[in-house]
Length: 128
Image (cartoon, rainbow, N blue to C red; front, side):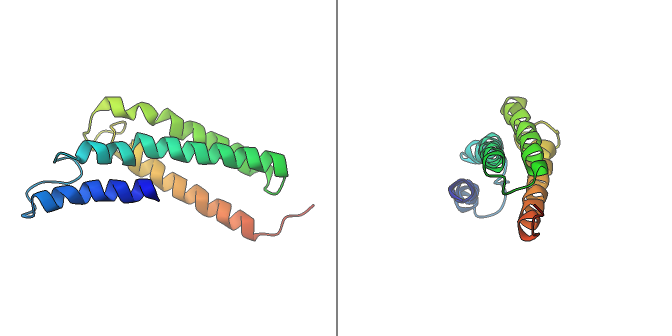
């Protein structure tokens, strides 16, 4: 939550700095690079850490099905594969850019879908 709030505040900073709307807060302004870092590689590292911790707890406790372990590890590896996107610039039209449609938008959607599936799996009673 802190990463989301800080990155949003960095984005709003440009709007407050230039209130006429002539600058795009996602790529322009003095704080845009920090916002891109928080939405991109830092968010990927945090999500991967969460997914690995989830996989470890699923393996130890047995409360979640085995597919949660496998799916979480696979998705954590995909998130970790997107960490080097910081070295590929800030052109949002490119897949592997730090704020690109692959390294931020697509994997973000996949992460949300995975978390929704996990939430649904917690609601379904498990057979023993």
